[in-house]
Length: 178
Ligand code: SF4
Ligand code: SF4
Image (tube, rainbow, N blue to C red; front, side, top):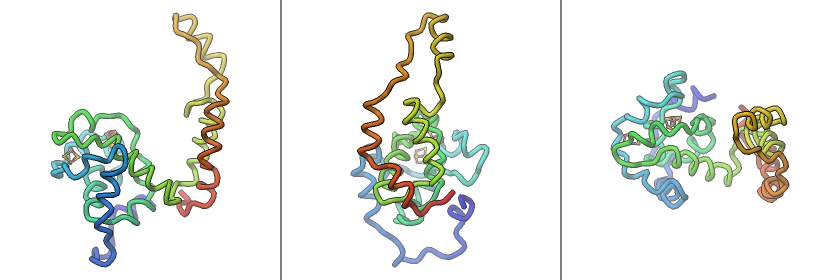
């Protein structure tokens, strides 16, 4: 699916473009600097995800947004591949803040009902542990031996917040299966 999404087999047609998409992204917190990108490719070169999966190409995703390929970007699963490592964030010569930009694009995608269904697993972990990793008493024992504070394993407020987002309903009705 990712491969298909980033390698177009058909030409880009003007009538398919949403030229207002870039403005929508600049108005989303985190997306403010997207128009600064001058396509140098530094983000792609340093991206650890790109190094193992060349279908995830931040420079190309930014171009697609600037062109106005809104549906193609929002309905893809490649915007979900960013690991949030901040390598590109540190090195971008135009301060595009790509890590935050990708989060902004994902936020728009979710609002429009596009989220990969496997994200339900991650949402479940966050609901249960407050994190995307399982946390148990074992971690707290290890932490206390190292003089670190215990992690709070009860997170009722977070569950309430997640419930209010109705994230499970969005995932169930999403059109992204993988
Ligand atoms: S490093 Fe910055 S300026 Fe260069 S392509 Fe990436 S986002 Fe654009
Ligand atoms: S923050 Fe995302 S886009 Fe940037 S280098 Fe890391 S994985 Fe790649």
